[in-house]
Length: 221
Image (cartoon, rainbow, N blue to C red; front, top):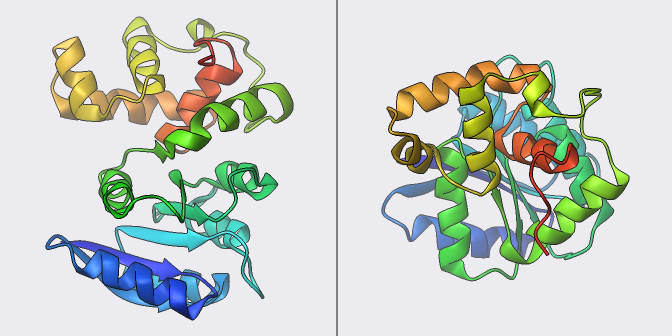
């Protein structure tokens, strides 16, 4: 069972997400929160598999809450899926830098949302299709996720790690990468665990953005 915490300042949104998630046989909402502080407290107490986090909330916002749950220096991070009503929102980039594993628009289809929860729970990053290209272009042209000075991944990674990074940047899951490279999934995970500290990132999503940012992979047209 995938255990989920839902954090949103709107009661109607919390109720809708809770109903949607609980309708799935393998998903369960174990707590709801109306602001970032409640979300952090619930996540630390219950250790859910995923926190569905709104960006803009009164009190503590979703960005700072995300940083507390899965940012740099967090020893045992909780995966965060950021939900937003804005298709262009500067807060998205702050959430990415804070360590979020994925982004999704709140008006996404129900099956897309539950699939995103499952994806993040498995340790994979996810971006809403309508956001992906815009987020990548924004990060590449304007923002720096981490203070990495190397211009190319080949200066930091082994040949196998580079192969995995290229496939990860294409959106492949660990299982799909393993099949493509004829490896065990556990081996892919081990390579990722060694690779991400070299890049100065904490999630698959940040690693993918690093690849675009450093022009290892071209941003899609």
